[in-house]
Amino acid sequence: MKNRIEFSSDYNEGAHPKLIEKLVETNMVQTFGYGLDPYCEEAANIIRELCGNKDVDVHFIVGGTLTNLISICACLRPHQAVVAPENGHIHTMETGSIEATGHKIITLPSKEGKITAEQIDEMYEEYRTSDANVHFAQPKMVYITHPTEFGTLYKKAELRAIADVCKKHGLYLFVDGARLGYGMVAEGSDFDLKFLTECCDIFYIGGGKQGALFGEAVVIKNKIIAEDFRPIIKQRGGLLSKGRLLGIQFSELFRDGLYFELARHANKMADVIRQCLKRVGMEFFAETPTNLLFPIMPDSLYQELSNTYSLTYVKRWDKTSSVIRIATSWATTEKNVKALVGDIESTCALAA
Image (cartoon, rainbow, N blue to C red; front, top):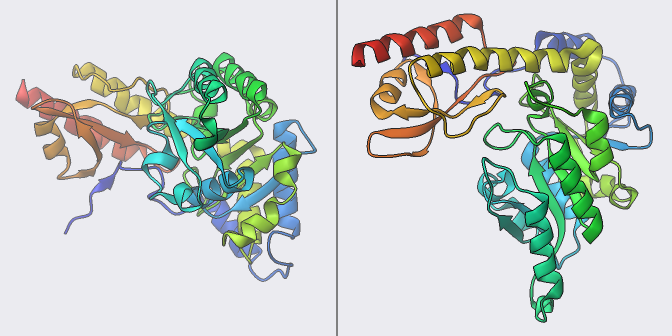
């Protein structure tokens, strides 16, 4: 069976060659394990510098679901819950992992994957003023992703407002940054890691979707959360004995701006496809400046493209079309993008 060209996700490839080269170069160097090695220390210090805060704790965990699970259960007591968008990754794509730790997810309606400070404030006030709130799970954390599940972005003012309402009600703010780099360099993005650090109690910087073999870097500003975070990582099975493998990768990703360079490339490739889809008259389920595209595609075109390309079906739109996700990555080639664009244009021309 002929392999299809992948546009289904941003983690189809292995890792950027510079990371592989460094892993090979350091392969026989002896270090202590569990992230207590010079490579993890170097990577953590680079991240602290980018965050503009030398006091933040930095931990490295293998994957996104495990990072979300550990981060949330480290913050919440048994009776407490996490608030998330209705389409948040922890609610829709992680097999009930948060619920399996004993914590409820309270969902809020979202617009293109985003929730607002006003929604959070209204939700908490309803809980606080209820005579029966002893019977409800207590909201204690707000979880959002940046970019969102639909590739959309929070603006600086929106994030500040969410941070302020969280502080008002004593809620932790946790940002899932599995695709953070793609969001940071996107057109219209107006904040950096320093601002994110100011706003959040805890967030993470994704590696697995942005050039690493695997790995996420957790940044913790709130010292209450940081105090016992490391033993909780171990208890939950996330403390990698060969932690150096994570530190080496993040050091290389952030050396000389490679992380953001790779993100810009993915966004650029996505924009080439975006402009093509617009030229053929296609509308979008969500307007996004990042590496994820959500065109409302005729089923006939989707079926034709699926012979050559791997795309992701999201949901049915109407009787003849569906929402499809097209993802580019740090490794997407211009050759494959040109091929996809050419096939979209030629198929649409034949159908006209």
